Image (cartoon, rainbow, N blue to C red):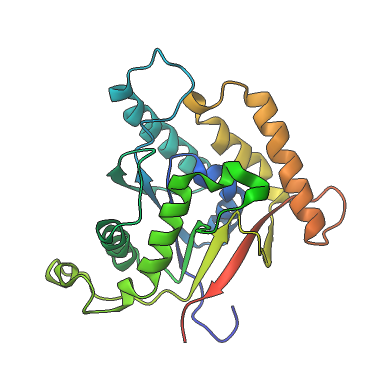
Amino acid sequence: MTDERPVERILVVVAHPDDVDFGAAGSVATWTGQGITVSYCVVTDGDAGGFDRAVPRREMAAMRHAEQEASARRVGVTDVRYLGYPDGRLVTTLELRRDISRVIRQVRPQRVVTQSPVRNLARIFASHPDHLAAGEATVSAVYPDSRNPFAFPELLEEGHEPWTVDEIWLMASTAADVYVDITDTYARKVEALLCHVSQLPDPESTTARIHAWAAAVASDAGLEDGRLAEAFQRVVTSL
């Protein structure tokens, strides 16, 4: 950013525990290493996730909270918030927009990172319906909800003053235009990802796939061979 406010706080909003680690953990480690405060908002409890059918659903949410908090620490994040929506049934509602707006007004970030609300048919796994709903609700919460004092007046009653976010960075976008070189933080991204034990029946193949993705993104960014990167679409949201 040039003539805009410096980035001091970043809020990452995702549908599930582990989404941020697949899409942006290397960037998060880079940002926290630069002294930027990063907060996570996880919209669902992830209770529909996991590969082991023997794990009772009532226990899965607690497991995933613990995994997410452990993974966050690996990349320098200590503020992890949960909205508690049911996994696999997320839709973009006014209530969801309000709840994300509340977090934006609390954290007061200059940048919000979230999932693209546009379905990516080339990477269908990135376009889980919960991801699309979380992305759409977050974009709407950034503009216009969180900045509008007349949207969700109950937030003002709670003491949450309006806040204008300068930019959104969208993960898994088909129109990526900004890249973060994560070569130096890639090992921490992997450490964060491997914290999600309940979600990784084959950790070795998962990490191999993530490395291939990061290498391909670095190539798209024009980085030299051997570099690794994550990609985002930057949307300017302030005047």
